[in-house]
Length: 195
Image 1: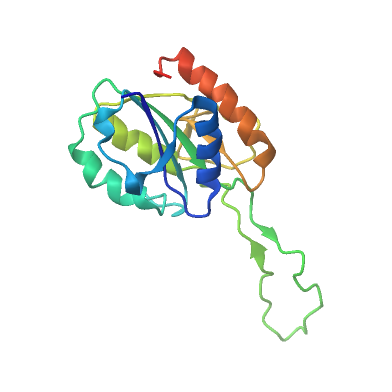
Image 2 (image 1 turned 135 degrees about the horizontal axis):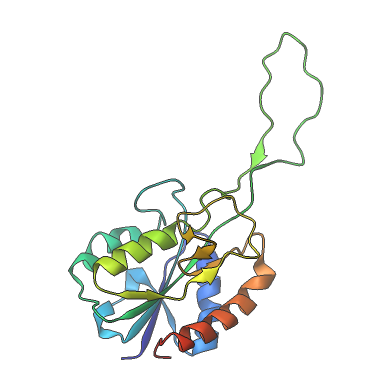
């Protein structure tokens, strides 16, 4: 039945990258909450954000969390090629520009300045969870991607300088996502994804 392009999103960034992939491979992107039988596809390209940082499971904070530990557990994906893309924010927490720099009286308790959230130590962690869950069902995960050019601290989805799939950061590197998608799709074709 061809390749299925499945994703779920919280802020829209994963949907944006799924749109880049859809345009590149000519397949409609479908939210996992609306997906049918994944075993009917010849190959799968799946994507998720990382929302529950530091968690051991249910890291995406999306419909994937229910699917991975529900419907997927009974799917037979033996021999299916699966490629994974993930979205994250690799920035380190930084003080907000509007934080007060006024001196506080010596007797007052100093409060730390407010910070802009960044998730550089959990960058794209949900990709690793997708990989583990799909491999348990017999899938062959392809599409590992170099961590060169990223500025994160650590990721459960990276080993030896390579991510388990395509990592994208629409918050800090949005100008690189489309080119990364094009290069990754070419790589997937060379690795046997039936596109």
